[in-house]
Amino acid sequence: MRKFLVVLDDSRECLNAMRFAAMRAANTGGGVAILSVIPPDEFNHWIGVGAVMREESRERIHAHFEVFAKWMRDKQGVDPELVIREGDAVPEIIAQVRDDPDIGVLVLGAAADKKGPGPLVTQLTRNSGSLPIPITIVPGDLSKERLEAIT
Image (cartoon, rainbow, N blue to C red; front, side):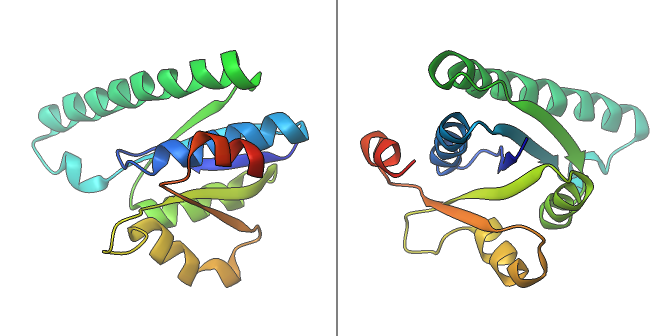
């Protein structure tokens, strides 16, 4: 089964990327893999404190994931999988794409402000020529109705 890989982060545009991935998966018989990357700089503390912070990050990711997963299951009939990696976001996203041969499309949300599309979109489009899959960039300010029409 072809999976759509979408990145779970705290950005506003993440919501539209999640919606797009779920709707496309539902309409094409695919799946959704949701990737969250924990940055390494969050744990540069004493060993005990770093372990507690790592666990708190994982709990926060699971809670955030469950919100999206419930919507995907209830509204789109898609049961997403959660993948958590630790490291720098772009190399970890690329590693996940290479590690999971079922991933067919990387879905990213683009910020709608004047500062640009966001760091992930900027960095990953620079690497897009060497990726083994296409990238779909979803504008962060698309309406639900427009997303439904597109997918």
